[in-house]
Every structure is written in structure tokens, then in C-alpha cells.
Length: 301
Image (cartoon, rainbow, N blue to C red; front, top):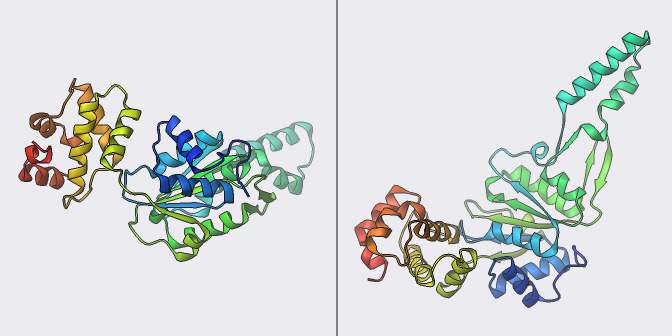
């Protein structure tokens, strides 16, 4: 059953066309995976190298469906409270002092039980990304770089995605009116547990082909000339074939093309490529390797 009703495209081709109108060019495999996630209400697990467009896909999917976009950035040490909710302690203290001051001024006795109950009112609850997603309808929830989180958080996330609900001791159970469409991404810095993967639809996001990357550059940066877009796409494609520490993704190709356009370039020559490598390569060792192999050869000159 569709997790987002009303604006769900009728088939993968319609989804691909809708994504393209937002500036995101999805290949057939990704469009099918995204369509099935919408129609079946299943989380979508996207793996691939950094910079291939996994995060941008979730953002574009939210735009296409008219859903709220909520992002949870994962990192080592992330726990349930940081992802789910927290209590606004400073506001609770201020509320407590106000009650005490009012009671003293009126010469009344403070009802400790009533005061304690009032401290855990919904207005003092700070919703973190997971709770925001459950309370938003419709919603696309991006759990970005789940491979950076710990095993314990994986287990907790699996439970939340399965139930589309959480329990807060002071407030009770909060369930999503419409389960969020969850998109989980991984750069495969470590293997994610099978239990989480089994809950999801899976798709490996490849680097785009030359023609698709040119189209992406032209769609996202219409001010860039077609020749420059082709030069950047060709050079980036060749860099990915080298043994680099961090092969450039689409994000880096966009940065490089944007930097070159800002310098007034209409084509990419070896001298210009040499002085702008910092826009596409993020490690000194990678830049040195490209220079040692010859930038002219990289550009196909």
C-alpha cells in the first residue's frame, strides 16, 4: 500500500520524469526502486560511493511527492535520544520556578505531584528527526550514512521503522498517521546488518554514464556550456578509473564545473584543470597521482 497518497506517480517512468523536473536524473533501476518504495511503503536502502546522488534522491523524492523532508545524519555514538526526542530542561526549570513564585505570592502550598506532571507536558518535548518524521504526514525520512552509526542504533532504528511508532514514558505511544517513506543511505564504510537490509528494498547507486553525467551537469548548471560539461564529465570519468583514495562523485563534478564556469571557462584545458583540481579531488595524494599520470592524458588530449 502506498505510504504517500495523492501525489504518488503511477509508474516508474512517471517518477523518473517527475524527478527530472526537479533536476534529478535517475536511471531506470533507481526509478523502479523509488517507485516500489512509494507504492509498497517499504524503506529504501541505497548503497554506493560517496557523491553519487543518494542524498539528493531523497530530497528530490520529497519534492515530487509534496512530502516534508526530514534528515537524520548518522555518526559514531548516535543514540536514541539524539535521534528521537529530548526534554527542554531550561524551559522546565523556568516553568518550575514560575510555579513556585506564583504559589509563594499567593500564600499557597505547591502540589508536588501536579507540578511534576506539568513538567512533562508536550510543549517541553523537543522533537528530534525520527519523532518529527512520525508526526509529519506525509514525510520522506532520510537516514543518511547509516553505516557510520553503531550496531545498537541499527537495532533501534529497525524497531522504529517496523512499528512507525515510539513510546514516551511520560506521554504514552505516538504513532505515525501515515508511515514516513524512509530512505537509508550507506557509503559502505562497514557492512550494515542483514536484519535491517531485509526490512528494506535495496539498490546500489552506480556512478552515471558519460551521457547521463553530461545531462546532470547541464540540468543542474544550465549556465555551463555543453562543451565544458562534456570535458568535465569525461575527465571525471577517467579519474574514477584510477586508483584514487576518494574517486570524485557527481557532487565533485558539479563543484568542478561550477568553479570552471566562475573562471569564465568554456572548455577545459590542461593548465586550467591543474589549478582547479582542488574542486574535484579532496586528497593531496590524489591530486599528485593525477598530475604524475599527466593531466593532458586525463583530458584525452
